[in-house]
Length: 497
Ligand SMILES: *[C@@H]1O[C@H](CO)[C@@H](O)[C@H](O)[C@H]1NC(C)=O
Ligand SMILES: *[C@@H]1O[C@H](CO)[C@@H](O)[C@H](O)[C@H]1NC(C)=O
Ligand SMILES: *[C@@H]1O[C@H](CO)[C@@H](O)[C@H](O)[C@H]1NC(C)=O
Ligand SMILES: *[C@@H]1O[C@H](CO)[C@@H](O)[C@H](O)[C@H]1NC(C)=O
Ligand SMILES: *[C@@H]1O[C@H](CO)[C@@H](O)[C@H](O)[C@H]1NC(C)=O
Ligand SMILES: *[C@@H]1O[C@H](CO)[C@@H](O)[C@H](O)[C@H]1NC(C)=O
Image (tube, rainbow, N blue to C red; front, side, top):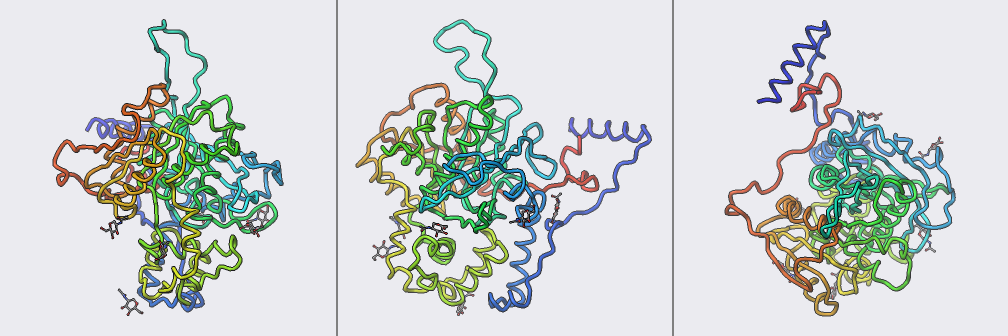
């Protein structure tokens, strides 16, 4: 009420100054894209007219979510202009920096700021490749340890923002799926906005292949979906590059947070940091702990119609004897080509491949590549650098609770450590993060405050709901819509003030 009242006063004031309010207009959710499949593409994918229309709806919506038209139009993602250190000679080198990203075509919250960076990382076979990342900055950094151990309050040194290294879940498989190009940074309020508004600098890799699609030598950069260590390297190399660029602004200490695909990556980061190979010695020390939400484990047999194309499309670049037709039918192979042509994202591809009978080769698990990939992808059953908190909904249809539990149990048995599994009864894949927000914000805070974990060793816990679980909204029914054009200001809940 109060906000509406102020807005009204302002509007009157504007009119009293003799200025006109912009003429309000309606807005579609696909206002910035009008893609239609070509006849060749319809033929390639064997798309019936209704199916083609449904896929176009998703694509036009997804493309409308891309700030500045996305990587194909946004010169930031093109290494030809404004980059240095090319070719790089090591992973984690800064190739391009956009200190201040123009926030005007993003949905980031008021009084947060964005930077973007391109840096070197390595793919599965150790080849240097470019990758992009964003940093979402708080208005005021959260401060820790100012009143510790009864010491008198001293004037704090110039504040540095505490770092959360965020590894996102499945957005897609091509340049357009990079969170740094998504108006709401893809996870919006669920993770990055919440963290920045709580005072953290959120450092978030896109993962190689999302964002920058062409390397300095002109070669295509595939996204190695699910390759835990490669994706973990993308995150740790982003941290290195951001440290180089913004050393005076961020703490050396950091907490890792990841969900789903990124949950396997965050767990993978803890595993990579526990290795003796010294590959990431420079960033190991600042690691304070890892939060893993709903990690993707043993994904291939659960939804082969989705995961086989997502993985198979890059695997022949790693194993030259692998053929996509080992896993997919001829239609599955041609739909994967179509997916590549249009850079379809997660939901688009789930619809495109929804009929498993049509796309999956029933013999997919007779070649040994399924198990080769599972070893690359699955976290767990290895040493890890703790402490780690795994938060998992019991009703998660995408990352199954019993699989997380089984991996947790076997890991704890062989490698006991500070590893907690917290379940969220009745919660699905994303809502588990919403329900547990207080818990994980406190967990991150405790790590920066240097407090020991509340329960040492391998422990299981459950987050009890205040009201009976069935009273709660199950999943969100809304999304952020960019309404930054003056004719759309009327749609903003708080006007344009
Ligand atoms: C809409 O897309 C075009 C390119 O297709 C891009 O140049 C423009 O910046 C986009 N508009 C906004 C507000 O992001
Ligand atoms: C990058 O920009 C240059 C011009 O500056 C252009 O020639 C080149 O085609 C662009 N590369 C890509 C991959 O878009
Ligand atoms: C390494 O990966 C890149 C990109 O996937 C590929 O082009 C290259 O041939 C691979 N190199 C080796 C030695 O396998
Ligand atoms: C899936 O494809 C098969 C083979 O074309 C077809 O018989 C079946 O009806 C399809 N299923 C659905 C749900 O469309
Ligand atoms: C493939 O089949 C073997 C034998 O049945 C099984 O042990 C393995 O888990 C399967 N691999 C995947 C990725 O499902
Ligand atoms: C997990 O539960 C599903 C469905 O209830 C079942 O099909 C699957 O075999 C279970 N997996 C494990 C590892 O227990």
